[in-house]
Image (cartoon, rainbow, N blue to C red; front, side, top):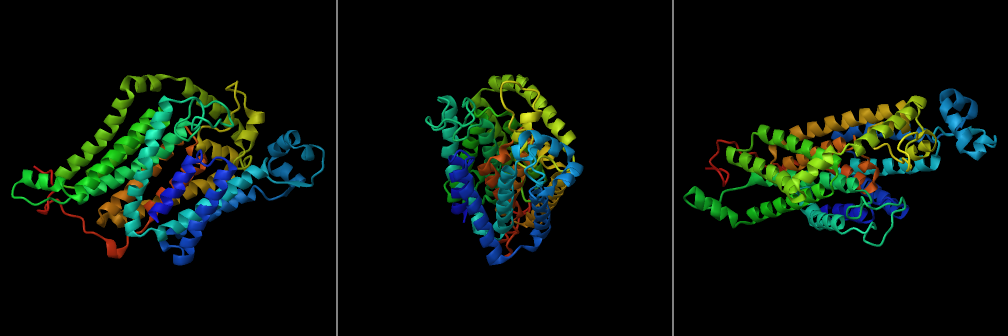
Length: 469
């Protein structure tokens, strides 16, 4: 199962993030199939019923934007929709239709409905398919893909000719911001951000489970432990974290670096409050976290990173984009323009950032409010709260595990980190990143299996960590 999931994520990422129809259509189908198989074989897990209800409400709300509404009713419910369609739709302007959906572009909203349905099925069905063994193997399998992909991202940033894979032109033009197979380095950074968090979770789990080697003295036990397969696995995971974190800094995505900073703070808090970690293991965990940050910053040049954060042009352009988006919210407060129609709305509402078309708001929360209005935003907020509560409840139950707990915690921190990035970006509009997001959510929601629970060592037990002095 772990290999299949990484194959889906990897193929989506390599296919330019699956942004083209030939990329996202099979990705949606595969995600839906995984979810259906999980639901058919195991049913809906009891712990996921509130999440399923929230997702169903959100799906109904988005689908409602596609229902035909009589023109008189449309003019009453959403006058701005009727005014915009009179300029945008020749059939509407010439009185050739008797009804119209709330969405100003039903085809684009239909794609969003398909994506929401497929990823919802995937999220609800996958936790039942993840055995304890698959859960532990998933970060390892992801590292096998992430390390060469991260190196590819670094190389493509340094030796770019403006074309993806050095031959594929972007349909939107440009190309100076590409990283790896992504047109936009921020979207590469978003995917790598979630990947790094899951790998860090796996690394911390291995640190907690580290068992001392044989020997009569502490130094002998440390040396004996370094020759074990357990030590090799820990070092390999640590190396994968370093490479992935370095590629994130190399992409020079400020939003991704900010998300990584928040993730680092969250991991530090988890390490400091974890009762199963002794002093030596806790020190090792903190050192590993600090080394991942330090190595990435130093390899990319701290002076360059500081100068990049001090450049206000990108932030100011986003503030202008948010002002245009807020104009849409003001005119479409209840029903929005239709999910996935921000680019269409900007044909009429973009007043700032001259020189290029603003196809996204560069703030997914604001864009959902503009496209969905209260109709979609309210169930979306409820869904976020329900999902967060379900994840926190599952983490409390999983505390008695070691590696399983930390892998789930790493996935949860990854969700928090990408949520921070979405304040400034739209990585989750990229299907490959959205699939990775749902995979992390499913991992965080996977309930512990009773037969695989491993007792957490107490700090006072003599089976001490190999690095304890």
